[in-house]
Length: 328
Image (cartoon, rainbow, N blue to C red):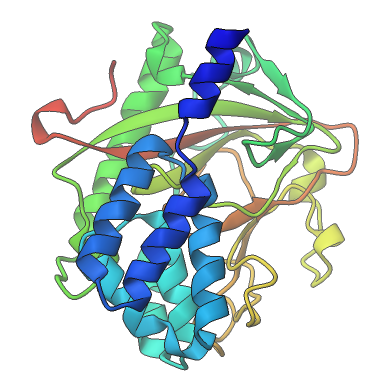
């Protein structure tokens, strides 16, 4: 008991460190702030305490004046999904719509492709694999999933059908990355890692399963592949009401950011960008693969009925060039 207490006492106060980093940034010391944020990230890769940093900035300065500070932080080396998300938000608060679109344009960064059709010979055994070895999650504090089940660490499996799937997802992901332009002025593109490794898990959704709005703080790109989609998803009419889009994927800003999402179409082409941060709704289909930068916030809608949807979520994590791949 004393040993556990001693370890707890030795843990750093990450919220205090985040506030200290914000003070440094407000003083114009972007390099020092970025270095301290990097130390926080080394301790807490998911940056769950980064909200303290944002809270102090928005308390100390009008939010429409924060964009140059956050851009200086990113340019000083603190470049990751959390800082890209904040940078896009501060750009919109400042009215700098081109800078926001530079990071959030679905036309540029959201990819929707088809891996296979309904007659793929691997599909039935794949679905059986993805629905086995599950761990149930009710309302975990450290994950976005609600009332659903996952099979974790698919990349560690020796199953031939899973290995073939990961081979195919890796190729699709590499094609996506290869299509991204080289643009040293774009913070996300400038942060392209030397190498990437793929990590994946399956999600089995029931009537109440959904994901809260979230981003993937530790990866550079993330995606989802749909293996089994129930009739309620395919048969749902296209309506504006969220409840009329059971099992759909929404990509766009979370609520409470101080601006409305732009574009409410039913695909990457839908809607007009009115405020610089576009919203897209995607109807899952078997064989569909969606890829996006990891700073793109996304969420899902519950099925609302006793049917099942199975997908594979995956991430591309930064790695050394000689470690790139998708096998452990």
